[in-house]
Image (cartoon, rainbow, N blue to C red; front, top):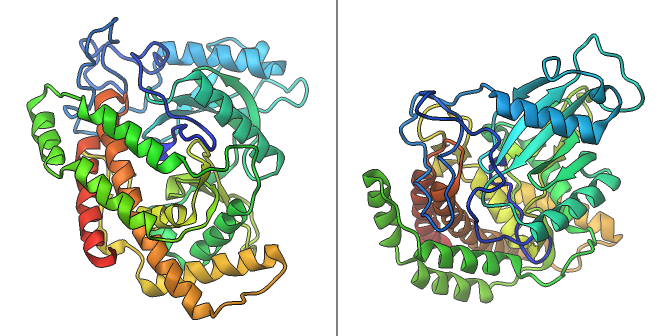
Length: 420
């Protein structure tokens, strides 16, 4: 999903307890006057409880319109941060369109009109990312922005043009996001493995302890235990989710992973198709057709989680345009041969970067990694199930978050039966 691009973790970005939506007003609509809004419920006031925000009544598809308030705020950000020709155009000339995808952020393409000439080296198009309600916190924003800038300087990500409390302006790269089924294409899978191996080899100026995974899970679970829903359909789904006895299951998962060796590396933590760009204009023979983006979750973490999480994403298609706005197919989880294809390219790149070759038996290493990865895939299912439950309460984005949480937990128990 591009989906899950929120800032968390002591290694890079710390999640914060969601506050009332004091910042995220962009994209908001009055549902009484517009029957198909994109946006959010009325703002919570003071200590009042959030309304259930899951947009289940909008089952006929998402609105792709940009309302006037959103356009005006976006125009102001571009004018103030990009300067040059952006300062010379009127809001009426300012061009903005919705970029599809994104379960945690709102994404827009902002452009100068064709008849306006550039003054200097200002970009003519930028990507505007507006953070979701769960993200907004000063500490997490600072750390995430530092990380984004460092990766941009190392040519591992898009350029950063502007940072503000509600989001940021990024380089727009002519490209398209991968489709879920393309994750299984051998050439793409090999390049993703190489990119991930390079990412894991980076030394970043962040906390090197692997706190992100379980501190995030613990924080989410604590928040979930205090949640209530009011809509009947939400109550039924939430009760089913609670019937899985999430605290007891967490204890079981923690015990399993403590017994599973996995190196601590700098992880992306969300390598799914929406966060992988297929670059335009590349030579067909090039082995550098892809770029990883959206580093909001990145932190020092266990290698097995990053790869296992990626394998889980083979099962989920977030481009479906009807409720619940995703499709899931457990049978698309990579088989052993597909996993070995990925692992071998990952290890080949890692060995090349280290300037040495494998000293242990290759088959033994591969077998151990398969166990490591598939056990940590359970943590992926568990984490994103909790994330989805919280999003169901506070998100402004139309998506079947509780349905998604249920499916992730069903996949968790199915894979636990095989790999635990």
